Amino acid sequence: LEPGAVEPQQRIERLVERALARGGKPRRVSSSLADATPTRGKDEPVRVRAVAYFNPSLFIQKRRGALKQLRQIDAFVQNLNAKLRSSRSKMTSAKVESTVHQRLSSVDLVDVFDIVISKHSKGRRSYLRVELALREESWARRRRFDGFSLLVTHPLCQMPAADLCHLY
Image (cartoon, rainbow, N blue to C red; front, top):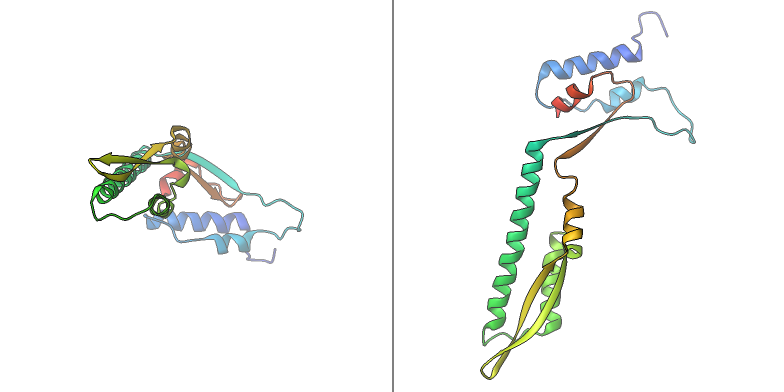
């Protein structure tokens, strides 16, 4: 190092101290940390520091959001079934399936539901009815990390894990 140059570790510590002093969310310091990092070869793995933590508030927020999403899908199916019972409905089974699939795709839930379309009759008139069966295993797989976060920092960052979690 040149005389008067700041060592990478000291530079990182100063950046972190400034971020903590500011409060709230820190600015991105990745470019500054990159300047402090010696270059590596192509075959060398990228080294990072990872901190995993559980946030109960985030868990509740994610679960409430998921339940809201299920209620919205249920309301969509009820509304569609009401339209299908109407005497003016001319939707075919393929069109109904396409409509449901499109709605599930828009919220990335195609793999969570099985679509069941059945034909019913009332008097002389027949109509289609949609039912969605929740795939419990697929739904549980999506919900398994609710509330968990993974923070990835520069390997030279010396902040304790609890302080990093507190920043975010």
